Image (cartoon, rainbow, N blue to C red; front, side, top):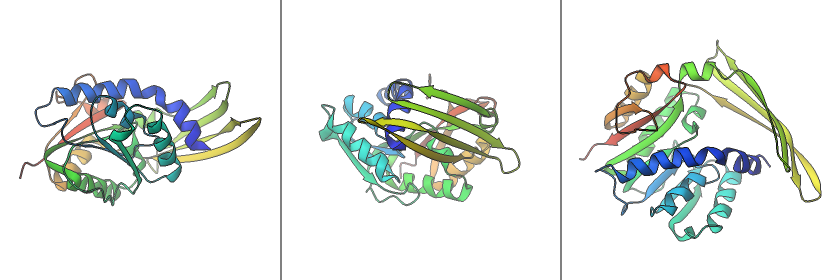
Length: 248
């Protein structure tokens, strides 16, 4: 049930994120539309569909079968289903082949890896899937941004009512989000609950992990200009990272 709620509620962020990725891909010399895109932790596939709509073949992976099921349904609603393929896979141990020109991961999916060793495994797995010179673009909450997410949010639509409580534990340095509510299912309402844990890391730790994974050019950036390095990523609530695979 939560996959349906996520699908309906979180897709509102896709136009901004998707536009930033397309703008970057279309102006970057290392990315070719002739190479496929890997969408890591793709959720219900809206970013994948956005990229496919702009001419990219996309493979989306997510550890949740429910999310992937929704992603496949969303793909079938578009004119670009032939460009889209989805698979249930762990981001730290992907088996998707090689040769991707671009890998993306959005909507703070990387923050869900709450152990630095797991984040490093994910970075290595992504780099293995990229073609020489391929690029990995992802966003993350910063440490300062995650600390500010102590809040309660109520969302109500004709089909959904839920309360999202986000609590940052400064001792564990982990954010816990608990989402509970009801969603209309035909003539009845179904209750759901869902919990998520997120951790943020200093930008230096992220960049070191990317270099250790084999990426040779790494920088933080803002979505409005992913090409330009951002010197103060830790001062922002969220930052994008651009990591380029070595060409050899």
